[in-house]
Length: 119
Image (cartoon, rainbow, N blue to C red; front, side):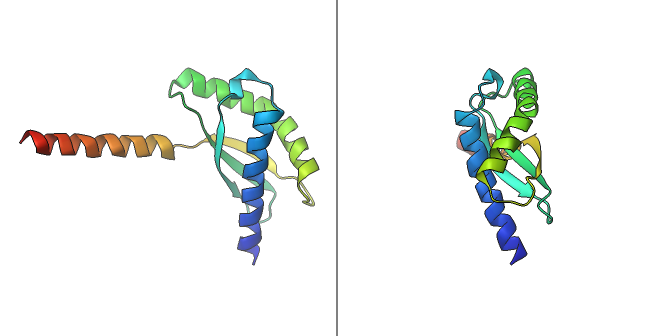
């Protein structure tokens, strides 16, 4: 039952943070950020929020991370108003590497097919 509640809270936080980033955060560094997942600790005290951006440039990633870190307080305050939790969790933002990893796998598969076609 506890895992089920954690999952519901994770989904709700993901939905709300996406909404907050879209409507409330005015920082241009976080434009185009998509929340791809949330992981909560068992006691619901900390939330790791995974995000992705379209750009792969290291400078853009650093700017986005800095913008999210700066907006952390606003996002947490907004979550406190929207969620019915005893304590709003501490937030940590991390870039989701799975999209980049998936693209790498796709390129490798395409290269294999191309090599087989050239034989």
